[in-house]
Image (cartoon, rainbow, N blue to C red):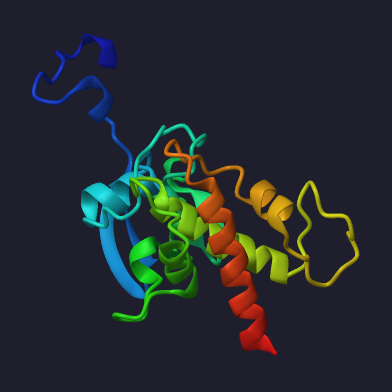
Amino acid sequence: MSLSHLPPDSSVAPHQQDSPSNAVTLRINASEHRLTLDNRVTLLDALRERLGLTGTKKGCDHGQCGACTVLVDGERVNSCLTLAVTAEGREIVTVEGLADGDRLHPVQQAFRDHDGLQCGYCTPGQICSAVGALAEAERGWPSHVTEDLAADVAALDADEVRERMSGNLCRCGAYGGIVAAVLEAAAESNRGAA
């Protein structure tokens, strides 16, 4: 007998009848979370809908605005384009995991000091992206506008920051404050390293 002759189960939506799920352990902000997830669930939806970590925002849901940016193993990713099951065993950091108790992360503090917040919807993604971008520059990863491709550390100026942050959109137009904040955080990091 072929399956096509069986009556449909009307209590389950057609797309859920053969939903492939797996138990996964996600390490987020230094805490482990054991979840059973449909393999098609994005990291963004797992964070927001299953774990209540709503700091990460759902913007375009197509990887174009950067509002959902988180850090995975220190590198920035669009969590709306990342399947949660692929993040198992990796270190995930959301905006909630950046501060040290009541002490803001230097990038968070710089955003506050330079008024890079405005409506705030894009801010979590902007901050996570800035943290990742600063780490990339420290590792010497060039951007499209980097002039010295052989440098061990990519020098940051306003053009570099704009290019490195170009995947994050701010509809309020807080870009001036955001660029100033990232440059301030970079300078703070350099003072700490000296």
